[in-house]
Length: 345
Image (cartoon, rainbow, N blue to C red; front, side, top):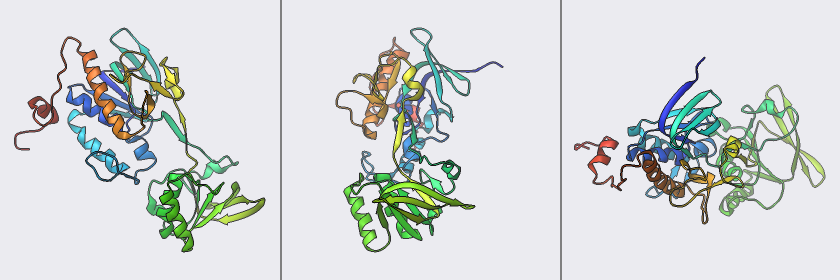
């Protein structure tokens, strides 16, 4: 069977907020893009890890949730008709010549592209899982590593594991609606924001949260799933009855196949310049949390800036004979045409 081959000016690897904004910046310059992501929905970490968590540092938006940010970005890029390839992972990247790359996925899709944009956040990331025999059978049932629908946990006896922001946020969020809420952390120093720690302790004082300092040593289960978590507290075992376990031990970021692409890697990030945000391979750009340069700040708004400059560099590469002029969306008829704006709008 012949392989499906797709030709495009730009291939964006990563459908998080920076990858989506890369579509927008390329679209303004008349460059169409295909977008590829290992996840089965667009949104990256915003959709996967904290869809309901408020974000306060997007310019012009006082506050929005991760899910709302992704929804707005999807609306913003509609005029440019990007093609999404979700649930696929890149397995091969090869320069065919000075102008084209061949990119192949694990679904045997082959792209022939002029430019590649790596917007994969921290790369391929997976939650750090509990390592007790047989516990994986309870994932997405009574054991969860992320919260998709908070309403599913109302009235439950909940145990939250971990002491970082995600763990504490969900303790505070779910405690008032739960039958019981237990927070288990291995040490008394929490890694989350102090304001959230204070909120949890206030709930504890009101009897709505039971904070336990100890090491999880095992679990009990029955026909309906996990029924209790075992905790070693100062050498003594304590059994905490529960219906649901939420485990937030952080993520294990992995570059995955990206590490094999021959790029200049800096630990688990990719070195780029600050003019084009180009990698050591001309025509391959890296934007967002995946890249590194002196002074790098891992902020969504920084990624938006990087995407804009990378788009201009890519346009020059795709059409080297044309001068790329900066035009403003406020006044440019060409920008309005590309955005689908009419005089009546």
